[in-house]
Structure formats: structure tokens, C-alpha cells
Length: 218
Image 1: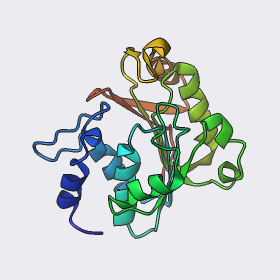
Image 2: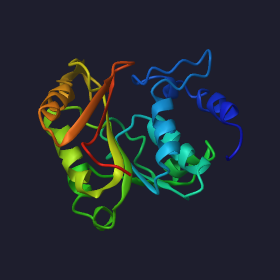
Image 3: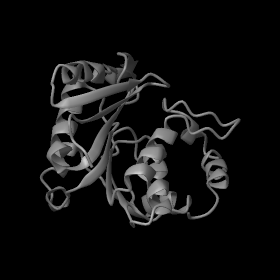
Image 4: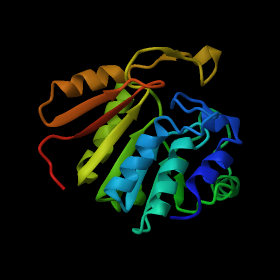
């Protein structure tokens, strides 16, 4: 394990952005909220590759990367975010420094949409993905695209996590004039009717849904 996890969480929460965005975190008792699910699954499955689609300031990529660093498989996180909310993810050096400030160098940022990423060599070279976390543009159509982009690249025991997935609400994160409704829940409801998938909701924070192929064993 790379350093004390409690100390690492304390340093993580010095950045107020790491305690928000609906992951049910709580600074007072250094509680990662849904981050414990991300960390625990990554430690349990021990994947060599994790994909994260979207993150405001990197909470989920950081927690998953920390779990992979604490494993012995030298795993890496592929983080896909085109930086459409603001310019936080636009400068590669600043992005690397942001992650390095939390002691992590195993995150590869791709400044692209998922649509752009699936046309890249980076996408073609991916396989045996242990975890995909979908937290980008929160519409039914985009959630479906993100899921289908990586479904055939999942490991046998792999899973897909969808954030902001248990209720519909209006978001103005892209600006007051670009408000839109989160409709990921509609895609989750559709997956429940598909016998090929197992679907489990966790209603904490803005909600998380865990999806995996039915009948697959490690």
C-alpha cells in the first residue's frame, strides 16, 4: 500500500471540490462516500485498466487510481474528459501536476469526448477493462453511447458504474443558458428490462448504478 490511506484522504479533502459533485462525501470523518465503492471494487477486482468518463475535478479518477496504486498489478486509469465545463483539463502539464499533487502518476488523461475517443488508437488498444465509470454528459443517449463504447472491452468480471443515475434533475453546470435534464435513469430503467445485464442502484448522493453482465463469473 502506497502510504497511509487516511492521511491521503485528509490531503484530498483539502481541496473543497473533492467533497462535492454528489458522491456523498463527508469531510468531518474523512468519508469518501461513494468513493469507497470505487476504491473497494478496484481493490477487489485488481484490474490492470480502468476507464473514467468525465469528472469535474478528478475525484473519481483519483480514488480509483489510488486503489490501483495500492494493488500489485500496476494498473492505470484512462480518464476521458474534453473539458467542456471549463478549462480545468486543457493544459496537459497542469493536469499531470494536479494528479501528482495527490501522489498519483497512473492516470492518462484524454481530452476528448467518448465519440472522439472511440475513433482513436487508444480506444482500439484497450481490452480487459475491469471498471468503467460513466460520469460525463448525463443524458440517456450519452449514457447508452458510453456504455456501448466499452461493453465489449470489459473483463469477464468487469462492471460499469453510472453516476447521477437514480433520479432526473436539471443541471446548469455548463451555464445557465445551457441547462439540461439528467436522464441517465431512463437508460438504467431500459437496462433492467435486458436479461443480459444485472443492475443495482445505490441511492446515496446523486446516486450510483452498478451494471455487469448477467451470468459472468471471474
